[in-house]
Amino acid sequence: MFAVSFVFKKFNKDSNDYFRNGCQGTWWLIGTSAFMAAFSAWTFTGAAGVVYTAGWSVIFLYLSNSIGFVFNAVYLAPRFRQMRLTTGGEIILARYGLFTQQYLSYTGFLFYGYVAALHLYGLCIFTSAIFGFDIQTTIVIIGAIVLFYSMVGGSWAVKATDFLQSLLLIPITILIAILSLRFIGGFGPMNDLIHSLNLAEHFRPINTIEFSDEMIDFSIYWAIAITLDHIISYNSMGAAPRYFAAKDGREASKAAWLACIMMTAGAFIWLIPPMIARLTIPEQVDAMAIASPAESSYALISLKLLPEGMAGLIAVAIFAATMSSMDSGLNGSAANLVKNILPPLFKLSGREQPSLKAQLRIGQVWTLICGVIIICIALYLSKQEGKGIFRYMLILSLLLPASQIPLLLGLFIKRVPWWSAIFTMTLVWPVGLFMYFSGKDPFLGVPLMSHEYKWHWGVLLKMGAGALVFMLTMPFWKYSSAKYKAQVEDFFTLMKTPVDFKKEVGVANDSSQERILGSFAMIIGLGVCLIMFIPGNTWGIDGRLGILFVGLSVALVGALMIYSGKRRDRRQRLELEAEKAQQGSATSGDGDA
Image 1 (tube, one colour):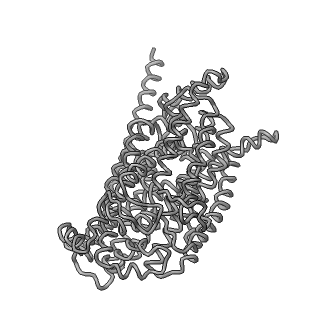
Image 2 (cartoon, rainbow, N blue to C red; image 1 turned 90 degrees about the vertical axis):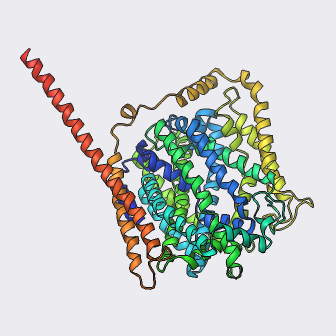
Image 3 (cartoon, one colour; image 1 turned 45 degrees about the vertical axis):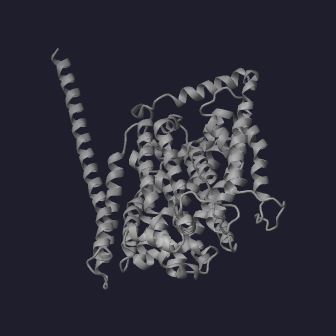
């Protein structure tokens, strides 16, 4: 990660490069980054804890992500790129105006910090389970590592490391799923054991069994709520920045399809190990001295089944998943400050706006400050006994303002006044607060009301109320100023105008991306293969063959990328020579004439 950040540092000439890759990101780079940013160690801790408790119920969480990416690919990803912006706040400014943008930009700092801290906390639960490290010490060390490479390399380092991390994560999680099934004897014996342990009702995708956390059940209403929540969040204006770095709308669409395919495959691969941990090693899981022992299930089954020398590698893979989410949060927070918060403040004070290079430096300093805050939040969360990560994720969706609904509907409904989004958020926000603080175990530690509501009712009520309030503002469109109406027309026109990459951006650097990342992948893959020489491994899938599967998968992709990069360079060189020859011939013809 350190090496990648230094190599890609040379790609950063100004804030445009630092925050959105200079709009030169290839579809496979953007797609894998979107996939990696969609999950983290939370998948292997918080979500694994839910799988351990409720089996297949969590499948709705991942498949809803896939559906969200489908909507991106079919419609919104190209339009997001065609906005030609750097941050989600700039889209809000273009659509609703300065007041709404500033409100969401300032509240966005809380969102970035909280989510990134959750990802960091989840990672440290995993590494503590594997290595036995003190969780607070782990949070500080890992947080400092992510902070460093995010600050140095910016968006290029974030996207590049996401891609390399995905190359390692995918084959090793496939290997763990295969070894888990092999350990229990396959799907048939797994199903028999589920029934013999009286877990069939617990493991059904839809069930109404009450669990220890009062906020959650896994009824059909929960499935509907989590699906709608993810589809809306993946397609609102806040999700747009993941495609700003793409070369054009077509590349953005291909990136979304890639993320969809990877997420769908991962949904099934990631669920198997924690379920088998529940069936085979429940005593080990329950003995873990952490807030929610079930969240260590994936780590413990991995530790039990992986070949000698691979335990550290799964830790690295999970490091990778979390870094991709935390670094995206850090980079996004810095972009939010530089592009959304500071320009109005400079304008208000009458001072000249900072140059693009100065914006880059400001972004780096803010990344440092943000990183320290995130580490402190993660340390606080780690000391809250009895509250798992999954619960914290649900709390977030209730406590945040109801911003996703107006930020989604504003992309489709044109005729609403400038205040429609802020009015909707202000009016609906108390709904989520009421539904949360009426529970038995609120964040403050004391019940505020006697009645208890489930999480899904709060989310569904917020969505319904948000959509209704937003549409009730439509009749006020006719009172909007001519200037605002023209602004809205420009917004929708630009969103539908295709990007001409050569005219608007210039020369692509696809071959450089392929050759650099291919070289890193080759080094990583061959390094993994060396683990097979550690004593104690046999030649089975649970030994050297498993190690070779992971290492050669990464190395092969790297080799193909290097080959593709060289071919692209050769083709571009021949095209350039042909163009020069044609120009020379035309010049010679003019001379003869």
